[in-house]
Amino acid sequence: MAVVIELIHTATLLHDDIVDESSTRRGQDTANEVWGNASSVLVGDFLYSRAFEMMVEPDSMRIMQILSKVTNSIAEGEVLQLLNCQNAQLTEVEYFEVIERKTACLFQAATQIGAILSDTDETQELALRDYGLHLGSAFQIIDDVLDYESDAKTMGKEVGDDLAEGKTTLPMIYALENTSGKDHALLISSIENADNSNIDQVIEILSSVNAFDYTRQKAQEASDLAKKSLVTLPESDYKNALTLLCDLSLQRKS
Image 1 (spheres, one colour):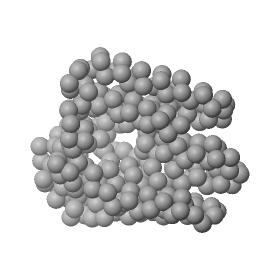
Image 2 (tube, helix red, strand yellow; image 1 turned 120 degrees about the vertical axis):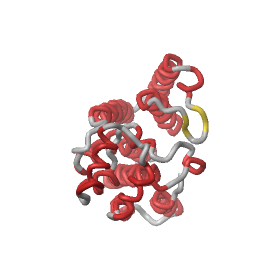
Image 3 (cartoon, rainbow, N blue to C red; image 1 turned 45 degrees about the vertical axis):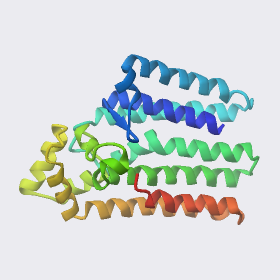
Image 4 (cartoon, rainbow, N blue to C red; image 1 turned 180 degrees about the vertical axis):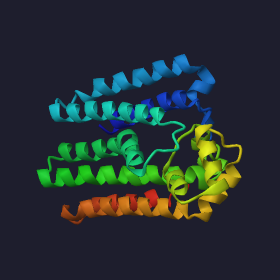
C-alpha cells in the first residue's frame, strides 16, 4: 500500500507541474519540461491506473473506498487552488480547505490505511487518521513558508514560485490583513498579476509584519495536534518515530 500512496503522489506531481507550468522540481527539470505536457499527462494517468490496479490486491473494500475518495479530494483541491489563482481576497479558512484537500488528505489516507492493515481497533484507527491530516497540514504550511524563505539551491526550485503562479498562501494572506498603503498595494498587485519581479521587496514586507512567524506558528499548532492524536497509542518505537516526523516536518529546509 505504501507503493500505491507513492504512485498517487507522483501522479499528482506530474499533473501539478503541468497546471503550474513548472520547469524545475527538486533541482531537476520537470517531466513536462523534458518530454512535454502530453507525455506527462499520459504518464501521470498511467501511475494513477497502476495505483488502482494494485490497491485491489488486499481485497479490502474499505481501503479502496479511502483511496478512491482521496484521489477525488486531491483533484478537488487542485481545482479549488486553480480557481483561486490570483485571488488576493482568499481567506485563511479557504486556504486551509485547499491544503487539506490537495495535500493533507493523502497523509491522512496513508496513516489510516496503515492502521487498517495492522488490524487496530477503531480508536487507534481514528487517532492515526487524525494524525495524518494534521501532519500533512503542517507539512504544507511549512512548504508555503519555504517558498519565500529558502533558496533555489536548497528548495530545488526558484524562490517565489508560488507568487509567480498567483497562489495566495498563508504568509501572503496574513500580510494582506496586516498591511496598508503602498505595501498593501504591492502585495495585491503581485498576487493579481502573478508577478514575482519584486520578490525581494515582497519578502521584506512579509517579514516586517511577522507573516513568516505567524505561519510557522500555525504549522506548530498543526504539528501539536498531530502529536496529541497519538496519545491513545501504546508507547513504542513506532509511536516515537511518528512523533519525530512531526518535528521534522517543522525543521525541514526543502
